[in-house]
Length: 305
Image (cartoon, rainbow, N blue to C red):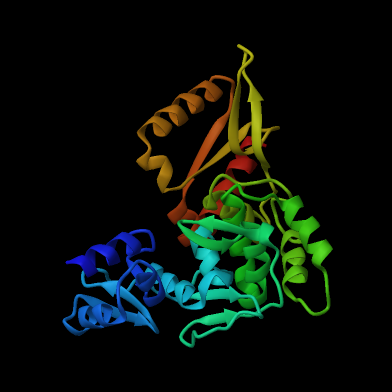
């Protein structure tokens, strides 16, 4: 019992895993730990790292084990950090860490990057893990993912509101170096970005803007603010001001949040009284019926003149 209590006290702070060195420092003996492993109370995850019997083999467990194995000089980076920060690149997360080159690495089952040094200012905490900062993670990720996935990565990074287009641009321009392909790749992505420097509130907004470009639909004004008679403002996702055509794109969040759902309908009615006409498209329609979405917008623009 003493062994498991000590293990749980440490593992509870590390996603259910603990290392041999940590257990020894807490007062256990190597023999006690080995006995717990022998009768199945502790399960080896990596060299000298263990999980409890009721802890599954998850990405978080494997990442925590990799960091513990490589000691205090290891941080989650690249695809691991991107997963922790909520970036989306359309693939499963990879256990990927950075260990400064002067430290010894004993990990063979994960992707390890070994720079000579790493700026301590870019080491943050993400979901309880030491990880590279969101901006550093994005630049690193651009080095290792396929080029055609980068627009999706950039948009998901912007949705976290932890960076702006201009910050990405300035950082990449400062880091531009023939040795690194990531900064150049990111500059190409933001230069080609349909929404320019504007930040979306949802993935469907990005997809609709890209749909307009792909189907030669005139680009509407993004997130247009309308001043109401009482001095307040209302915002439209996409708008054609001259014919007063408003386009709203709805993700799942708009259906799950009852208060937001109600507010959206009040806003739409208020703007309708000012002469605005509305089209609403869902995520599924934008993704799976883009031809119909484009044709509907073009038909509405033609009818409204």
